[in-house]
Length: 280
Image (cartoon, helix red, strand yellow):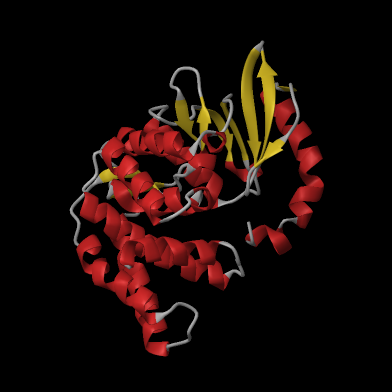
């Protein structure tokens, strides 16, 4: 992730020692090679003959927040959390298998839609709501539109602002995973597919449908395939189609702006293509 390009060198240099110390604290033996995502490394480990996964990431609030999210869902569609040490950036998790990213996009869309619905139990009142997220972004979108900076064309900003009022007025209170995509879903044993690294919000479960699409957009040949993938998720999650479309538009514009602000070059192109499929 961009935030680690300059900040992560010291943590990375100390990581081998940190892993050894955490294994000693929790009585773990490393049982395989290290893997990594965008924010963490994961090692298969064993304790008393039981396979688990040790996840190490830079210490901070995110570790605490992920642990709270996993405890809230308590294994319902999510990886089980056995222990957490936020001060050291460590979590001890259920051992899972292959990533959903390795499966065809049509299959993945079906799985992700099912997980949206499975995770959509009543959310905790203290969680940040999807409605609050919209309200917090509107001022920035309006500022971009008024400034006419050219980073994102006005028609895309207007489209996002046009749906913002409806999304902000939602009365939905479901638990929402605000970081749902194929790479964050791994094969399990007690359930076929399980979510890792969730971000717990409360509100509309349609919130992150845009991410489901833009993370695998290069596998979709044309607008017709984009819409088929969208419809697969809508059906599998039993979503309101119009609300799902509105969230795709709003979240994609919001992510596009964020991506430009941190210097991303490929995802902004995907965002434009995805929006064009829904706005043209």
